[in-house]
Length: 37
Image 1 (cartoon, rainbow, N blue to C red):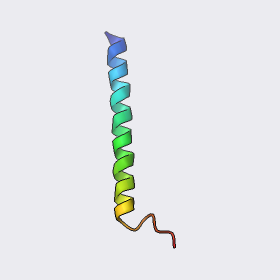
Image 2 (tube, rainbow, N blue to C red):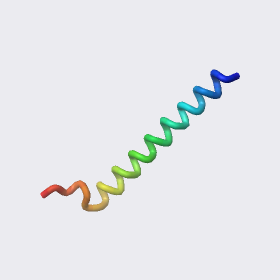
Image 3 (tube, rainbow, N blue to C red):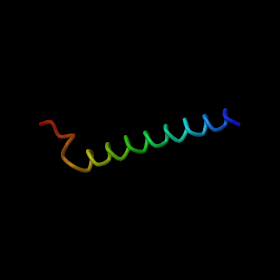
Image 4 (tube, rainbow, N blue to C red):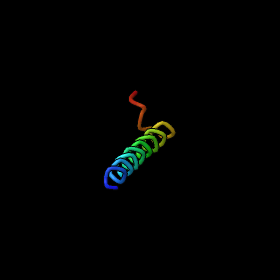
């Protein structure tokens, strides 16, 4: 069923992107990169 496969791939991509963004934000927050002053 191609429709289910497409939905699964899209969902996986969204989860992957969300994880990357969360990891990047966490690293920045733990580090100094969010400090602007």
